[in-house]
Length: 595
Image (tube, rainbow, N blue to C red):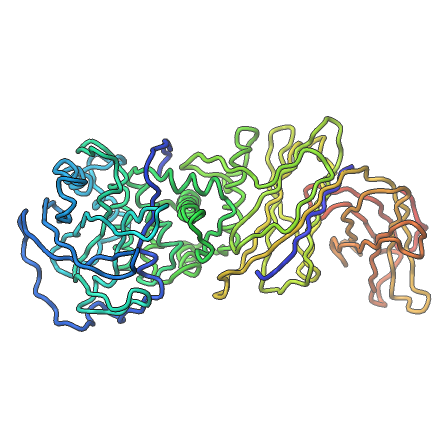
């Protein structure tokens, strides 16, 4: 029989769519940087300058100065731009230095058509119509009923990822305001989305769907979302922005592919981001929103989330509660992490609907795969709301049994939640998902799978840290795991009453031959009710009372009015109701038995 022991060392902590690969520059949004730490007046009506009259209708050729952001030098600067197109819902300005070099008339015509009239998702509706129908109207601070699309060369701070676009909340106010990193900033006092003129394939024409249009949809969602919830947390705002681009039919390959390569990326904690995993954060946020769409009411529910004034996790739970769904965010995340890692099993078996996507096809590999045992790994780190997967495959026919245990080096704080899911692939093709109980008292979890190698061909264990309180930032755990195999063996069971205190009892199971360490539990039943339900036995190594052999022990006390001759005890191998095995059972006052 094989045995797996996984140790966890806690430190602190609408539509189905073909997902084609499209080559492009890596996509980074500048909006999170501009929103980070920003404190704005409570209303856009407040500012340091008088309100301007409603903007007059503009004609093509109109020139204007805009204040833009230099992300490299972290400062604001001015550019000259000219109106190159006026659409039903947009003004398209192009930075003068970019005209006829990176941006040409066909490019502008393509942008206007996609924004106003037609998208890959719907040839009869443009980006504006799709997103406003779904999420509501954007603000109109300049009272012209149009969104300004400013195509400019965004001066960037990174050579690896291009800042493809941004929305600047300060533009919704008047005069000069203060940014914690950029200092005093001038407002353009208009509804503007800034799009990198160099973030699209060369020779773009009216029939080409490029990254540039995708970025426009992404940034328009930011403008709309800000109108409803100006302080929305980054992961929800960016997830909804990518979801908006997806709704318009654009390709999110860069972000999704990055998450497929790093599926242990934290969903909500973007303080963990680096240049190497930045795009994976976007991919995680987008895929969560797509999963949210697939299983909780589609676009209508995502739209309700965008319009919900609550930020972060409370916004999600309240949005669902308004629909009569009382489900915690941690439970939703737990289902989502399983759906991600089961993508590699979907061709091998059938799985319940909560554990799959309906709108996209992914391939997310587990971090750790094993086909021979013993095996182990140490100091594996997980950020808050991220997940690993440990997959065990049966190497040969006839192997029988697997035991997995998780343990921490120190006692866990109850506020720190570790969730462990286990998935089982049966030889019949059925895929079963179960929960592995995690003991916060001693920071351990153990799972026995006696049918591994016979009825079960694959096992995947998926741990994650899930802390929902406001101090979740930068919480992490590290864990070790070890995997062993061996036979179950036979055991002698001793039922020992205390000679001095008659209400106290001990149940001891002694292996009759060397065997791997297993997870045993004790259940006591009295008059068709459970006095104890699956309480774990303590494993004691080299117990002096049984020289050279380890034992399993559980101590308990009973009320004086309980008739012990009617108390049934059961010892089971395993902590799961799905896969367990009775080791021994009997009545308290009966003689000991052997199995």
